[in-house]
Length: 350
Picture 1 (cartoon, rainbow, N blue to C red):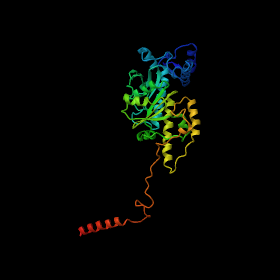
Picture 2: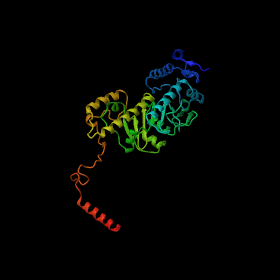
Picture 3: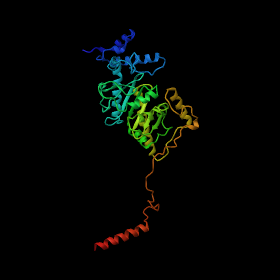
Picture 4: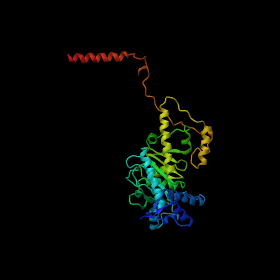
């Protein structure tokens, strides 16, 4: 019968200096035990003085692509890794439940070592993934562990992590309102909602075939100053320096914002925006949170530029009709033409 591991058991192991990855792979972890493992990983990362990302659920011994097969398999089947697998499955269900993905679309990855990541499999709905479905890969995309084949778009996630050492987790999906902006090639306007300004920094990457190195490079080129990338004619990818849930939150914030902007654009009046001074206050908060934005350091007069935003097009017919005349007025030439054609048809019918 599998051993049941409680938070007290985890604390005892930590007190003895034991490696948490030594917990049997078939052990049953209580919820509080999972929390204790996460907390321990966070404290270990903090003790490193911020020299490496806070890899929640990472092994006590640094994991790399050069680790032995036994070490990789031991970590992949450890309770610590199970915590991350369950987090990924939870985020997958949220993406599917909010219709941010369809079919087998979307993918998720978490950095678990210097050049090793845990990721979703290919051809599996994000709403129905199980921990056993997930894969371990190196930063070249080679699969190191897992029964199912890794996602075909993993190269993009890995290129983000290579370019942005602070990236702990990445999420890619196709939320309809945000993807609409991506298809139109329009960056969402700014200076409208505080949450979007504080937590998101959005740019557009040109279209390339999904899963190709070219697509990954175009996205990676933007991640130094942006944490959320609209992928033209495709979808959205975000990264977080905290957790996979935080990367997912970027999606919720962006999608809600794009939906709100489109609603505001249909109300028949220009949307009210913040002043540059008000936006500057929000950018100070953003910078204190360690969130990148290309506007950090700009003068107030350089902020809130929505020059590319064209909200809506009025398609209504003028009150006077297409001719611009008074309502109900007729066009004499059109009337004469209709009369002549009618008489001609009636004459042929006799």
